[in-house]
Length: 113
Length: 113
Image (cartoon, rainbow over all chains, first blue to last red; front, side, top):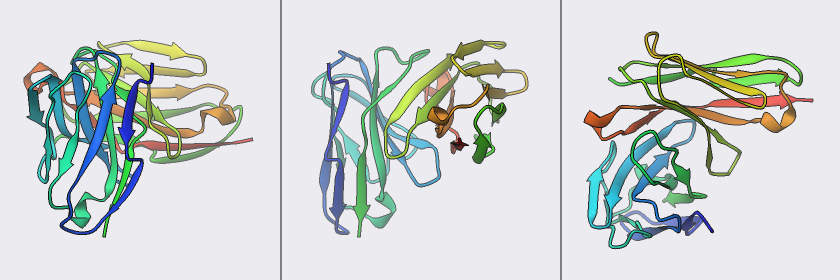
């Protein structure tokens, strides 16, 4: 049982490049989330999904896209990278939406230059 | 503007001492979560507080929630070095906001031998 896994662990992008951050969970969780964590700040929700085929915007969705074709996978797409997207990205999952602990992946550190 | 404020943001203390971290929030909520993050690592759930007056304890950590005061506390008793980490609180906005979590900036705790 690997829990929540993320790839890559670290990536450097040039301005305007695109990339996909991968997230997979093997706990059969319905809900999945993408957060970003800027230095010295709390997490901010980018997008979340309540199940395969259903996604919704969080607090800071601009510049990102997501899809959820399976229960296990929830990739995050950056289309035109900008320096403001330099951050650490965490994927999380939970079985229920409320009153439920979220389980976090190890994070992806992204640097946009 | 919704705010979740933690204080202190940084705390250095000696082993064996007691201390309290405070989490104030500006919106109505009766659900709050505490997480721990070790340097360069992911987030780990500590406590889920689901009602006014809720108190949870695990080892040397005890968390409480006062929804009327919009305040949660994380109390550390007889601190040990292994508790050195960054501690985050997160406030659940409830069903009307799709249970989105608003996170505090974190309290970095260093415990010296």
